[in-house]
Image (cartoon, rainbow, N blue to C red; front, side):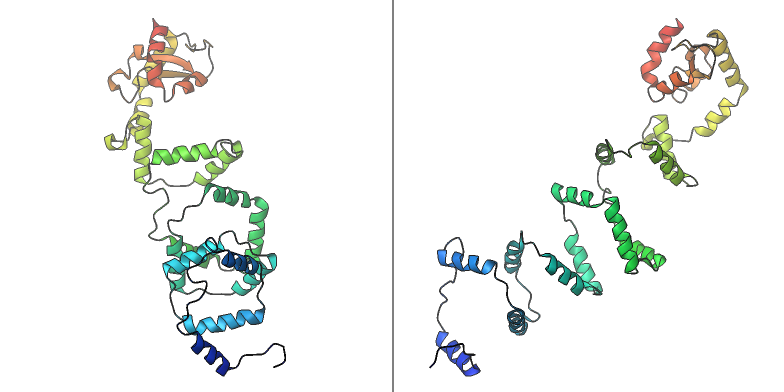
Length: 323
């Protein structure tokens, strides 16, 4: 028979398969680490590119055997390890992008993707890459791409889908200690150019104007201002405080303190200006001392602002000033 390349017939393939029945493959249970021959063959085939015809043949041969067949966990793990560190070329990425366009996933497929992504934790390196990728230019490109693809045609429909997707989901910090979460956010924002800048404060102020607070939020704010916990909260003090501040007794108490101190701040000793009558012992904690002249001291506005939240620390200091 002359030398050359011959295509095998069906009869030829059948004869080969019958002859090989019962034979054990030479590379069974051998790996790259255990056998040099397998390692050489693996290295040769690593950078080998299969032709489209070969790919089609492999695909057709696998369709018949593995149609509807579920891969075992061991096989999945092997595939995962084999794909680690593999980088696709630019051409391959473009082909994948074209092939994935206009694909509509079924509801079951979406649910499977959602389940697979739940509980996945990103590494610090991956988080850093994500934060670096979210620059203004890249965000602008995303918006332009979405506009081209018609993603913003029906904004109400997009909002409705987002609302449905979030329904029944707990926020990421639902079961975490709020103090720890706040501290993490504070530490993350420190050093950021927008942190506590004037522009940021104005934006926060605009966002909050016209907003209505819930009853629970009001109670929390009231408890914080009173210096107590929410479980110990009993009532709002603002109506009582406002009534007392507008009363004649309070006006008399205030004027008598200013006259005693000669209308001078007792901390920086500047006379006149915007003066405040400060309660040495807290207004909310000591109701019996609210109109006691010995419990009051004259302070200017900047000096009075320093005492807010630190009233207990200034009690001895102000009492010595009055002696």
